Length: 193
Image 1 (cartoon, rainbow, N blue to C red):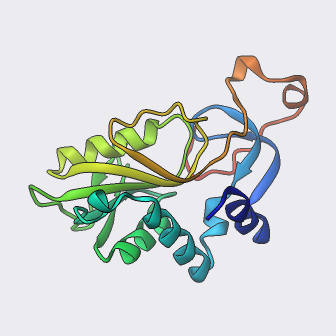
Image 2 (image 1 turned 45 degrees about the vertical axis):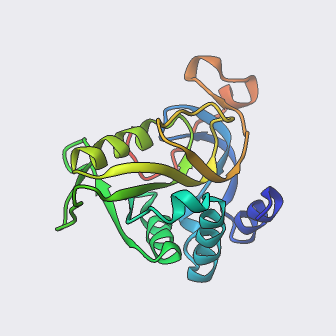
């Protein structure tokens, strides 16, 4: 899928929002990608997952034994990636502030894991998820996401394969441009700040 095709999927379900948003990374943006909306249609979610899977090099794809995603944002795309790759999918969550496997999920020593996110901005959640996966016994051999918002700067410590890299600018709270500074930020994501 080309960038414009991916954006068309987001626009078709009103998942590309414009305004002033506080991202889960703590940064501000004039654009927000509501991945839960783009993934609410099972056919669209499956199409996007197949497109991500096609970006994975064959040598990596054939090694993957599990897909693990961080909750909440990565749960749906992680499940669809498991389907696309024909492997089990599970998720890590933060019941006490730190990612961990729960709900009977477990990894076996030697499991080769693809960590899948919806959107990566700074990579903090992804790195925390990778750490939890490795502490649970898995080996993360690659990461993937629907969208890379890092402008190509994120380092997850493993090969990273986003479906699309969108370089919407993001800003620290002390560097807001006047058009954002003059309006109240909305926090549409699922993670509390």
